[in-house]
Length: 230
Image 1 (tube, one colour):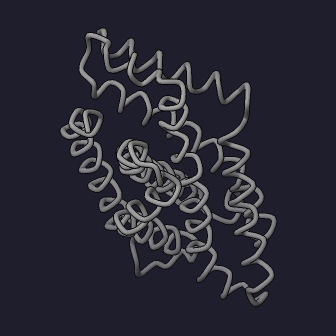
Image 2 (cartoon, rainbow, N blue to C red):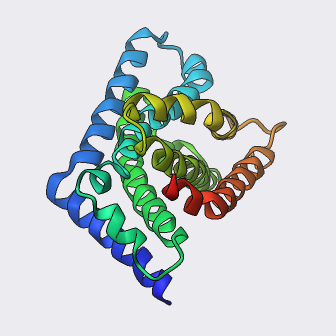
């Protein structure tokens, strides 16, 4: 019960700070918009090309912008030394991880929700109307699982990078190679859904996302206490 209270307290604190500063959502959203706009000007205008390449571009935007928010996960805690106070709380230290994971997930999903309508406008692809309802709901599941898996591994790696003097450089170097299977699974399942290919199913890739999300969460839960003590 105490661990749940710590998780909720961390989420409330992080979201309250974000509502006040709007630092994470704005920075990730602006960076993702820049990625989409650059690719939009370089892609041919044919619809087939858009359906083939746009899913990968969408997840590149999610991935590279998400690292900006993950970089701030423990930065403020270290700067204000509030992480030391959290570590002194008489609860399982994994509660700190789950609190940070939950707040990162909420902020990243909020940035995704702001980005998807702009993606539809730039690439002339309204997902809500052009996809059948089951395919659209499956796409939302892909976004949720892909973001969860990315946030799960990114949160633990942000804790590792926060203990170094090169946090901004180390986090992307650690995160991007490990997150490659997540990005590939999310992009492939999105491509299949966008193209509405009757001979291909997105569910094998969706199961890959679910497995990676579970594995990352369990590994982080088992190792987070040792990461904090280093």
